[in-house]
Amino acid sequence: MNFPAELKYSKSHEWIKMIDDTTALVGITDFAQSELGDLVFINLPAEGDTVTKEEAFCDVESVKAVSDVMSPVTGVVAEVNTELEDEPQKLNEAPYEAWIAKISDITDFEELLDAAAYEAFTKE
Image (cartoon, rainbow, N blue to C red):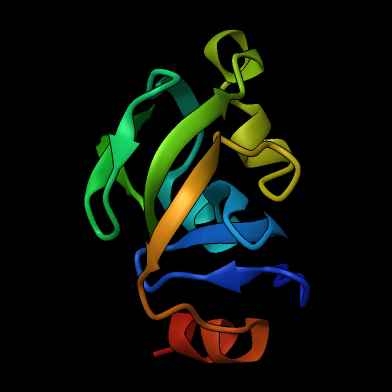
């Protein structure tokens, strides 16, 4: 498992990379993609959508099941990674490069974990 130190993590297995004080990239963690299995589809949010911390903002479908992706922050979807529509497997291949959405106007964060705390959480 890979836990990049520069990222923050949610207990629902999303990562967040702050770009500035109110903008961040969000994706799913290496742990999440390994638990889900091979991803075959993603239902992306739309630019301009409002997202709320700890609520689903998109979903991914694997060969096993459909799973919600929860937002670790409250804000507005500024951009989506449309490459994932044709290549959802990028979430499996490179989970920390294949971001799902750029969220701007962030006003609220859930309690995020650093890499060491998230790694410990995944072992519980």
